[in-house]
Image (spheres, rainbow over the protein chains, first blue to last red):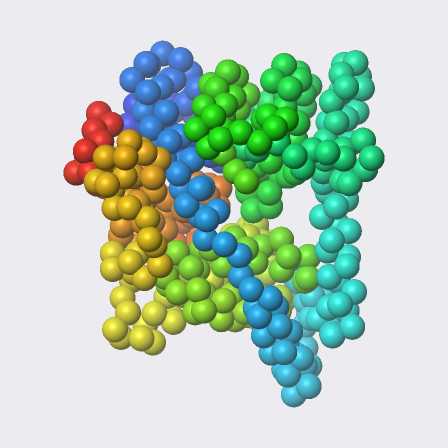
Length: 230
Length: 166
């Protein structure tokens, strides 16, 4: 990364396009890339190529499935076995984690994990709902199973990443204008975060969903990426 | 720890699966990854994101596992190890499905190129984080990403899709 105040070359800027599209650049670098994009149509076209690649890379990885319950069972057995042999002395860092890996704590933690994840989702839902209330919108999310959010499991959906600089108010207005609703997210693992968004109230064909999602993405610069999902 | 496992197991699994190309092996490896995390919890200094630390351990485990099997190398052939009944890039193009063709080309990139593309696009890792996970300088990360994308364009062109770049 260019950490000095000197301007980046055109080559440097082009090399950063994948990270710009993924929303993982430092704000200063992102600003420089944005300025270059505004002045260079060809660079903007190349950013679209990057976004195509990113969309398909995400779809490819999402299609890989999830690990089976065997993983957790094996892990638990291995930890239990090691604990029986010798309890390792642990200091500092994440050392407290070893104490959480007793069989009883493991079972308890499973429940706690669900609560934490639901709380996280709830905070997002609250943020969005609060903003909607301020702007007089009737927007609601289905991040938590409340009566107000019931029914959002029906429809057609997309995985969406919003621009890092997009405010909750901007996103809310945009979703309102498209009759779209955030139903889940953000997915863990990255700073950008992907949300599952209902883009149509009914189930639509694959072609129609592709068209809707493309339109969804192109209709606002608040959306940096959108891909159809189940 | 359970929260950590719940939050990261799927992504770590997918990262490893893309490297080793075998679901059973990938599952065994992620058990080992989280077991190592439990064992080495005191070594985590919080200088990087937990997900970055996990992916670095996972990568090391995956490469070590592949070195234990001399008949399995970290090369282009590993892409074929993942069972895939989808069309090849040319057929996908004939069916006018550009997305499918792109995915197919992503699958046949070299392991080195797949890895950097996955880390940047799917795992949302910064230049600095990719450098930490892969163990290469930041400048090399950018160069490798550029060549991975260039190779992708070449594969697409060979399949009949000219993107006009590079």
